[in-house]
Structures are given as structure tokens and as C-alpha cells.
Length: 173
Image (cartoon, rainbow, N blue to C red):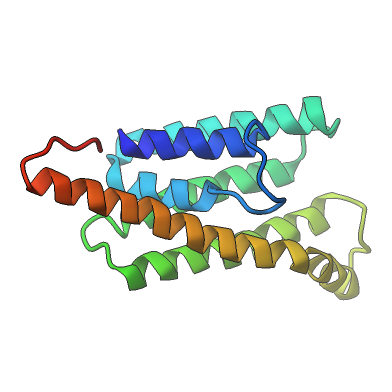
């Protein structure tokens, strides 16, 4: 249950219903937590929720056409849920931090490569690709900070709730 609460929070932030600073979002942490705490057969739920939100924003808010970079992002969502599954049996601060950083770095590299490959904003050469990555650096800093922050909060809250469960208090998972 807690994984769904974190997912709803991430969707609300992603949909801009809960305003946070740009590129400061709980998406990576929510996907990791969901993967760590929910069964694999539910993996499609956060991917579908975030994909639908992203598609709505792209088409109706930003006025973009559907493009392949959206598909790349959706595959990345699924990858983060699977990576979260790696945390399911042994959740340590080091593993959560490593998974969070892997999420930040992979999203930066993959999503910006997709923007460079799909859109015409940058020349289709090595210089254009590097310009795309350089332009995204300010967003990367916020992404790393938010991914680590929300991973600590989500997994920390989950740990505290599980400790209350161990003391005989019913938990919400």
C-alpha cells in the first residue's frame, strides 16, 4: 500500500499538480520503491501511470507530438521498477543510494540521447550530442539531489513503518 501512496505522490508531481522545483521529483525513488516492495506482476502499474501522465503533458500541456523519446522514457520507467526489485531482498542504505544514483545517471544519459536522436534541436554529430548533454547539466544536478532525497525518505518511511509492524502494530505496505 505504501508503494502506491508514493506512486500517487510521484504522479501528482509529474503531472504538475504538486509543484516542486524543476527536475526535483520523486519519480525515480517511487519506481525503485515500488519495484522493491510490490510483486513483479504489478510492475506495469507505475509504468502505465507515469506514461499516461507524460503523454497527457506532452500532447495537451506542451503541445508536442508523440515521438520515440517518450517510448525510451517508458522503457526507462520499467527498468527502474526492475532495478528496485534488486533491492527487495536486501535493502541497505548503500544499495538504495547506488540504485538511486544509477537511476539519475541512466536517465540523464538515455533521455538526452533520445532527445538528440529524435528532435532537430541539435546537429546529428558528436558536437550536437555533447551540446545536448551540456544543456541538460543544470537539470541533472537537481535530479541527483531529488532522487537521493526521495529514496532516503521513501525507504526510510518504509523501514520505520516495518519496525512498527515488528512491534505488533499493523503496517501498510
